[in-house]
Length: 168
Image (cartoon, rainbow, N blue to C red):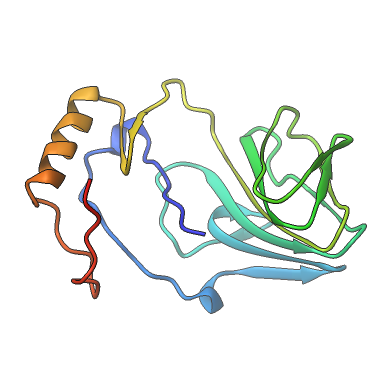
């Protein structure tokens, strides 16, 4: 699963960067039938080596049937995405490829089957950014400029991937 983490408004003009982090270097906890790997941010006393620009968590969680996990920060806006299996959140079932926005983040997630989920959350933003294709900004004008820059080939190539360029 490929994910992008949007920057807060005051950081949206920083120099872009791409880093690859091997799975083995990400912090994880394996306990009581649940493996929790922290991809970005901070959760459950762990800190990811991936730099973030706002308080957040992005977790890869694999759980055995009937095991439970609590949401790490009840103050964050939080979502859960089911990769496989089935989970129960506040008596509602979520199945593969479903994204659930957790209304009450002081909640427990129960693994109804052997399952894998992505759990992510962060501070709720006061302003929601605009999104168009791979472009995210709090300014419509910056989105339009990014679209034109892509068309004009002004974005640098992805390191070690000179063969692939997606046409917009």
